[in-house]
Image (cartoon, rainbow, N blue to C red; front, top):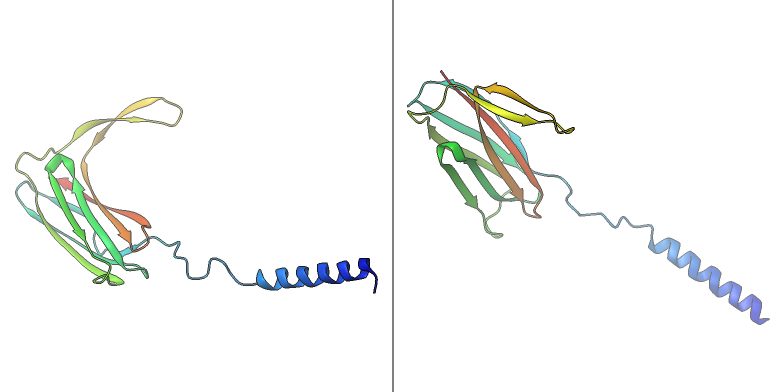
Length: 149
């Protein structure tokens, strides 16, 4: 056999091996999905001093690693970190909020569009955020809205 035929045969064999090894899905088992939530009610209309109960069932196949509810205007902050051993694929989150007696009914907010133009709006809903991370750091934010009447 000539050197050229041996080289061609080896090259062909390597090509076939490379193609066969690339057949598997390199992304198999990788979680690209952020946590999801089942929320029965996300908008509330209540008076000052009344209570609101925030409820959400958070789910993710990688397990829930962190939940953080926050609204700076009312000094709300609730954080739950779950260690790797205790993580579950579903978490039933509940948090009770008492609307402050000095909560605003409405206020002006300045919004800036992508082109840089600004405009004012009358805001009437307080926007509470619930940030969630799963076991591989995928993130999702869910919002609850409270209107003070």
